[in-house]
Image (cartoon, rainbow over all chains, first blue to last red):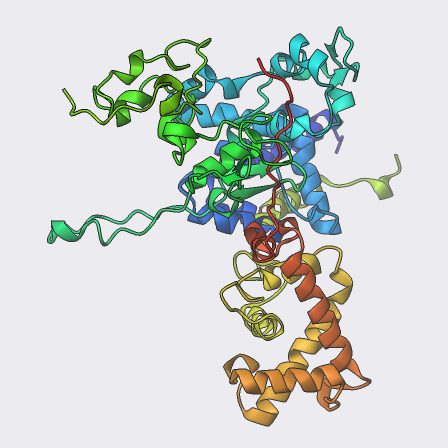
Length: 354
Length: 185
């Protein structure tokens, strides 16, 4: 019998495609319990995911498939198999920056409103906008700690990112591919593999008890610590201890604010108003950042009306008062303004609202 | 090509089918351990948690078990501490054996006083029978204590101390709150 190598090769190819395709389809369509979780390296992540609000999504929805990013993902997934059998896997499995940025696009598919708000606010700034800022770079030399709050997922060093590292420009991106990437993606403040709130139907037989039967929901806000490469839950973050000279400033214990102050922080001596501190003082002392700022856009145009319906305690429309809310060059910063700043001759007695 | 190295069409089909079929076996590689753990069984984890709670007892702050000692050891036994797997296996089995022999109960079911006394014996090398030969009880205790401390006071990235609970207990603010920019727009 004459063998025809071409025929054998064709049959082999067909079999390979059929087997590989079938396996690929099965792997990406089945429950993680019978696929990804088969590797014990994945189990702890998977256990957390199973408790999260994203538990109905398959792994591929966020992590992609072995072919979704071409050779890159094929190599990565292939290496996972190699590591599984050689025991050479990492201590913790984490996304690299490229995958974190891909995730941002996946978040957008379902969280379009939040994405749009984030895009319109200050936290969607790009690497180029932050690291090529002429005014900043002449005032303060770029250094490794910049990456703690801007580009926390970047795996390189600051010198790999921007050049020169001096206060004399002009500055250019050494990592040109980073230029248009956001420095604060979704996963800075959010994490998918975390405890969620299980769906529990309300008990309508006794509507008055619905409130009392509710469990407290775990915080959805976290902070990504670049140095340890882990997320810390907002309630576990330290509360800012702030001084105004010798006086202790009353700081809100809102867990969300603890995330804000990780980056919008005072200088080393924790004196109010130093460095990037915006902690409310004066008439707003004790309020938290999210009391006025929308979480994703940081927008605060509606903030006055939320707490001052129409009029203030003084009987004046607070939105028309001389503060930075109305005019960016006002000497009365909305974060720090006091009654005495406007009432320089003494604070008048409270008037009845008109 | 000589005829000896040739493969018949039938053999090729058999091999190809086997090869393709074996791919699906990877998915059938069912986890051998409870969800969330890599090495330790439920019994191992329960025993180790009870030991951890005696070494670092809970008070207003979490004890060893709650603060991730078991998950730290479990994760490390699958990584840099793979070399200690045998010692843990031997020590946990010996501990269970000793408790059943002396008290007819597992260590986890003993009162806190009895647990502490037993661990004291272990620490001093007083346990010599069964799996504790050649001074193993002292070595095992020191190993578990050392790993419990690493878990409790180390970085959460290694599997213990979730959300830096021990840092808060010691009054250490972490991550530190530290502003950077010294200019104003």
